Image (cartoon, rainbow, N blue to C red; front, side):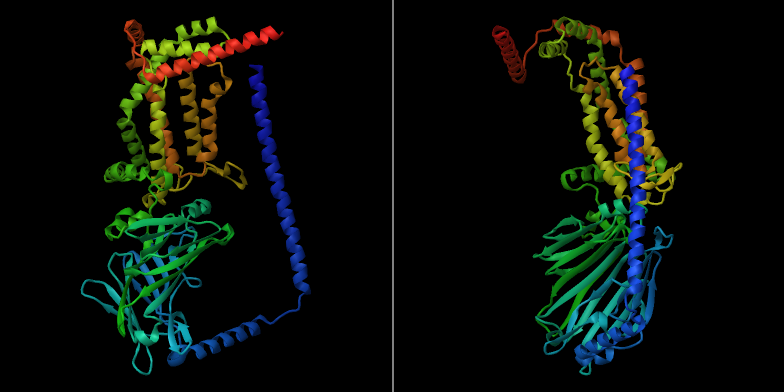
Length: 614
């Protein structure tokens, strides 16, 4: 016992040393950064001063001259006054600009970002929709550099609104952009109508440039980056790639739609007649900028060999809501990560079990925390037959403990012989020593399905329960102001509860398990719960709350089943009866015993040889 106290004291001192090391290291880094800034400021003072306003004016003048030279028959559209027009419905507010005839600002009216303002999926700056048009031999200009005419709003019979922009040259040829916003819809219809395809476009193709800067909208930017992906529908199936420092994808086959998906929102460009080819390139920014990624896509649209053509497109600006996305019937719901990669199988658990049950409870319960608790109870009831079988197996092993203790005392240090005799005892009594592993194995797919579900369910976003103010993110009762490796920069109370209840389960289970001489096997059940502190600390509080409720149910079931349902005397009597029945060995058991016997003989032979040499 003294050793245990010393070990615990050692671990505590080591933890305090680590905390002190990370704290003082961070302070040293801050001092170095201050010193570097001081040196940079000093160097900046020595640099010759340049009138920034003059330099900016010169730059603008050069850019304007370049555009005028490239504009050709559209030279009058190079300069003009920018005019903004707003279309909005109950869920979406879109500010259009006549410069480039495109959305300039897109706001989701029912969702708030970390700054308490409406979530903005398009903002002025990097975001852009553009394509080049020919103006003369070997000359072209980007549509985003031209001022369109029009911008009038038309209200349609179905309640939708349409805004139309036109750009024409002296011959009457030109381009028309038409955007339609429907009631209570996040999808915008966009059509490009071109009169003069042969002269305005090269090889009857539009090379569409789509730029989308993804901004931070959740408090945990690390998780938001991890959940951000680029998805696309090609060859009648969905595919995706995750972001790295720099990620890109080349499309050789037709693409129906391309989506830049954040944790809870996405912007998707859809071509009714498909993009014939293209590519997308994404760059990742430093966390301090608040930018998740900047995506630039070049998408080719091939038009029929006619002088007039209409290109039907759509743009989705909205939430990753499964029902909304599925309603468009183009596979757009697949951007929601309900299970991907090697865990793709769990998406079927989510679609066919977790989501329907969650929606059912949500229909008559107002608190999402209670909904999660009810979902947990339902899952545990569903798996209860297997859990009972597991506890029954544990009770049988406990009943055999006295017999195994006698064997252990008899064989002493001969672990191999003890293992062989132990297996014989289990087989003769009809006990499966692996029977207790079933619930643990069953928890793996369920846990991963719920991990995906709670990470992806936008309905949990901003929902509070007890001390957690957002079930879609971690609950924090204390923030450190610095990061502890493998733990984080905050304390999650639900994570602590999940860890404590897991430890209680381990303590109770060990009390029901035969004694083990291997120290590692003794302490292993306690190591995993402690590891949960680091693993769970940054996970959604919905998941850690589920795990806590599940653990409480497990503790209750263990106590009730062991003390009120399982009759240990009957079990012992049945085990004795099983021993009297004739036993048949499987081929696997026969091979295992042969291997064990061969190894035992080799050990005896080696001992004898070693004794002879001495």
